[in-house]
Image (cartoon, rainbow, N blue to C red; front, side, top):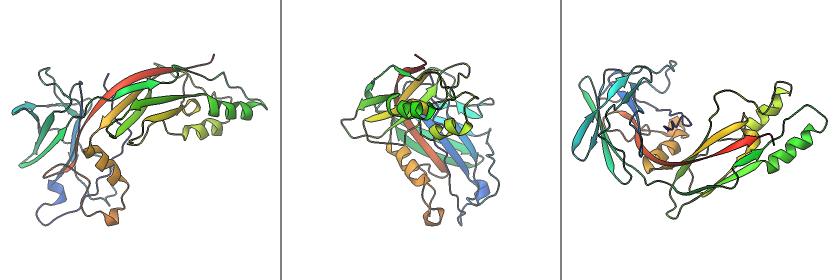
Length: 275
């Protein structure tokens, strides 16, 4: 049931200062999810923004703690995911609660705090099925695609009485590929519709329209609606800033770079079927 937010590529724009060389600093990406295990904490070496080396150097020997209600909970490094995880079941991520983070690499300790949002409310789908008939190459195909683009949709809606930020993801749940656009169709047809995003940006809106043709496969999809806190919103907004105008990297980590944020989510699902 875990939902990974792979939708955001975080570009940290590092600069050296007089007190600490870039080689001695590090980056933390730590995300908590309401009601879910802690398994999304990553620590890696910092680099200059203009470095030609784009490979992340993961730090596997850091000491990582989550702090809640005055108690410390130590995380273990997982070789498979290359992230730090908490393997016990005595720590719950609860809405409206505050959590601390402490990461020590060598003699350098970084800290941060974040609060967990409340769960989204009122998540609804206008349709639980989107019908897209089998597509075959013919003279009528452009007309069929135009009609499907307009009508093969479903609307996702939710309540947002406090004008809070939300984020939406749509994930294919099938075990194997069942493509809507077969190999018999020109490649450009499917590529055109794939340009329509299936992942929203942080928004205060209360609805989102799913374009059926923007998805790759027939089958079931899971819709996850996340309520996000200001830490994550600020990071997203800073992502598109010009590096020449950015004096400090977008970060809420003290004594290092990175982000520590929390999310709460609700889910629903729909299918794309041929008839």
